[in-house]
Length: 150
Image (cartoon, rainbow, N blue to C red; front, top):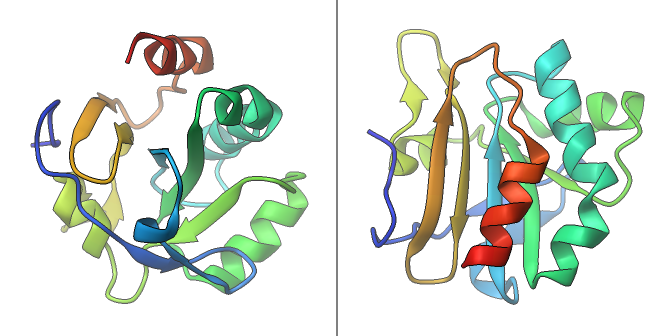
């Protein structure tokens, strides 16, 4: 089950699409994690492009957005470049595979992927989370409205 409001927020140290380590304890403000099952799929691509196009709006709310999937960082780099991602860090929850997704409660072991989900957290707790059906594209305006409410 996905972590809920008030649950302990997990820390992470993952590589982005460029291979740089991103340590959640070094991120200022709140963190938005947008989990997608796999790179190079249409809904996942649109989900990440929505975050890229709205990156500045999200940052203005004191939130740093990240895309996350179990793909390895080299493939994330090729994919991010192919869909025009320049600002958004797309993280590889790859080694060990799905460790962050497991902590969040959304790792699908039999498929070896994460569910599609969005989690808003600060350094200590989950503020908001939502699990989506695999083919469902998260509504970026709904996500941004939760950034304003919290």
